[in-house]
Image (cartoon, rainbow, N blue to C red):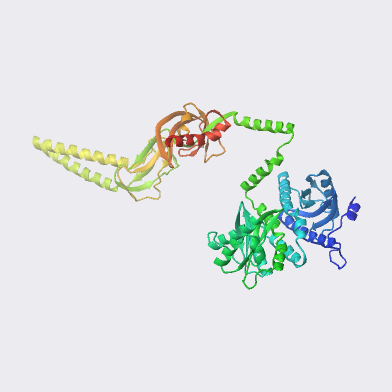
Length: 617
């Protein structure tokens, strides 16, 4: 079979050099092969891991000729033809995964054959690629099919290529296809056309809806879309695209038959250059335009315009292909939806319509199936007991023995304040007490009752001052009142700093029991009730689920992050040693079962209903 294919399918390298005796058909085939070879080389560069590839033309359900193969040194295109024949017979994409060949026994390959059929002709693209997953295989198939949109217009492109324009258009297509970025491709085309066609300025625009979006201007790296020149260039290109014809202001006979107002405004307002716009086509539809501008003394003769139109023939499919590759995910999904759910895909038979209606009703029925409805809320964990440790008196920080995050036990010293002044004050009052005791002994000796009473009153005052100083000395040591963890406070970086009376130094929370606080949005709080269950995940422990149960709802709204929220207290189903006060996460409270359509739309309808109420409707 391989021998037969070798006889039936001519290789593109055979007879590649043109001769004087060659027929017009042979010359046309050579042009097809040149363009197809450039297309295949670009496709093989776009798809990573391609080992070899080939493009076959078909006729009446059989392979006709090998238009191109890659790499150029590979002479095994006939072996690919066997696989191409199988795909042509099946009429669908054919994939043989995990194949081995004699020269690559250590490396498995995927063989992919993709039939391409449209108004421009029928082809089969065959590729041998490095083995990959099924999803990656489908991505390769989709990429080649997108490129096939341009390959299908090969006959149209070749029919417009002749003489000098042939080499210019092929070289232009190859240079543009070398760029993966649409802007770079358009700029390359504009710069190359400005040189080849001897134009002062060349602008390239692509169709975006009903408008033209300017993509590049020759010799200009970037431009402002708001400039009047850019708007004038786009208006001139739109004028040619809307009329689907070449607009040449230099040709007075043609200018009298078509609209040239935008071109004349461009000529009068921006440099007095002679404009000429050539529309770009792909599969029979206009996809953009190229605006050529020359000096007034040069103008655009009919033969120059004819040469430019032939040179620009492949530009439409090439730029459209690159733009298709750069589509965003949303645009790809939108295009897929349009292509899938169009009129041509609607079944025409009664049975097909009944099946489609049943499928649609089934999908609509799914929307009304009750499913669990959860209310999301931000959550934070707090200790059930919380105490603040403050500065007992004005002073300076002497030492710190713990900081936020440390676990402490009851009576443990956390920090201490400077007590030198208190010690001096205590010595002072002890000296006063000694004097009073001596005076009291003397008064007792002489039995002076009035003096004795006065001295006893002074001694009681000194004893009170001593007791106050002792209390301040004792409180200079900040100790933990119970076992727990410090949730705030770090004095290690503030030793020697002054503190005021009542200044908060530490916050201590108990570790024996936790309190969970949920922040529920005011729009969802109506469905939240006590004794409802839910699931909580902490930001620090995203892999662990914690069961919760609501216990109370505080009837006070708070404003946080510009939103009004209600605090809902909940209880953890099971305590864990990994939990710490201050942890935050997200909780989902199950508030009942609702239909899917209600869950997806109730928030929007509630806002609309409230807006209508506020508007008095």
